[in-house]
Image: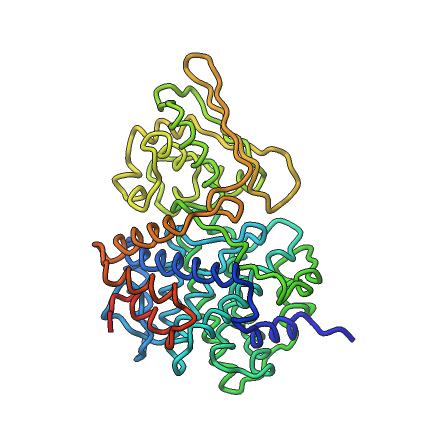
Length: 457
């Protein structure tokens, strides 16, 4: 009898060794660890983070897990995972696995960093292997899906990867890890309704999944029994959250294909689905086209793009809505030649010039049937002169096919730190970059959490 998905994922998560990973996978761990810590620190400067901390204060208890961007804020591991998970995703700046339609690091890194501070010192190699294995699980569940997502997969799939990564750091047995997965199923949640309405419940769902992973491991460690077939049971994850799946190729790839190397950066703080169009708008601006020249702009892209960011801009829209609105981000790129963290303030959202150009931007489907496709994309500009200009991409900037350079990755990290801390912190930035570059020699991965909070101790 073949082994079930649960035990195969468990054995991969508990047994993967850092030195068994390919060099590109090891480098990708370092790359996206730096990137995700950076966007998590940047989240400390997001307006709604204060609301999250105020709510979380009602659940707080004594603890030594750090909340990033605030040196004096320590709390329980579950609470820290919640707040840091929110901070990673709240500005839509975190990395994504495009074929899986999963933001793996938001849930996983928040949970694993909190766990690393919960247990005795975790080496950099152990942390890196746990993180890579967790990404394999979360993205593997997304890759197995053959129909469009109807639940918020970064949270619903992310909690299973985060739970097994945390189980690895806590030294769980296979039985303990299986019980933790049972509670991950019990806690799994995440609706696309928040996405449809552009509400901040999206990063709250990420936060809840990160906290749920920590809590699932706490329950398993306390000896609580749980469902055994959390993934493939008749009421398990696959049956409940996806309409059609094929997990066999994913399971066969464990230990051979490392999904962390397939993850894409977000060069801009918007939904990933808007980023191809932003690049096309920047190309148009570089070609000398200015807002006054444009009679209309049409982005033709796969159905996922229309579904996720094809919404119209409107007066009074929130930052959460605008980050998922290509009409707004495309207008910003065409007008200012940039889309950055500061461009989603109340002042920016109220700009009349951006609003007027947004009204002339639409997104239409290209008719292809792949439910997870992000490319190709074409921006067609009909000019006031009567001429027409087109710009096309076949891969997204920041993807493995068109990656950020190490220098650009470090530059994004430093910009995120300055935004989150309110000013550049070269001491913190340099220390984090050095520690991650030398992850193999890091004795205590929890130091990264302390640095992310602003402490050099």
